[in-house]
Length: 285
Image (cartoon, rainbow, N blue to C red; front, side):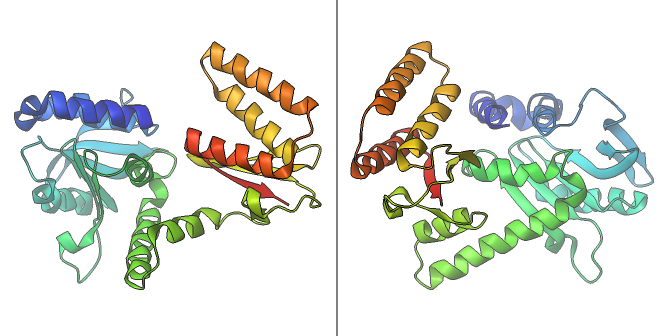
């Protein structure tokens, strides 16, 4: 998904003129690749059916799961504000009893709750995504609610994300820093996890948590902070694609295993790895 979003950003920069006037190009180059990255079989009409007929006209795509239409998707060229298509999209949804509508011009994605008595259609927009300007991780998380895996809980997920954004705004207005908020959120799923500098030499280490896009937990067999460092480095070695870098890590691991290293030095090394690799490490006790 990450690589696909990067490719789409590049296409938007390099071929903007084409997408401004050509809806079919938007569909083929931007929308369908995004759906494919989200787990939809775009060449299978049992999952992604083009030109779905309704009494109100034809929806560009019907997203189908387990034989049931779970969302309609309308495509527009890049020159069109997708909000303008929301009303027509809602009519398609209402006609066929489909709760969720999606409209995109390749750059902007809008998700709509089709039925909500007493609310104007524009007030039923539950999520907006800007593929070109928003941070990559935020785009991936927000678009993941359209994935084949999560589509049936799309409104629930959008509501939860909206609550997070609202809560962050409130906390910032109270003087809480973004770093403090981020650390709090990252630590929510963890129990008994601490920064390396908070670990006492006498404490038994159960494992190491590594935040590398997602939290990963790896057990530490020998129960030491040194073992946590070795486990972390072995994880990085397995991830490394360059053979030269793999060998460097392998040599460093072998050397660390044979030496006595003070806890202060181990903590220094872990913090250095965090900074160099852009990851976060917590120790489970």
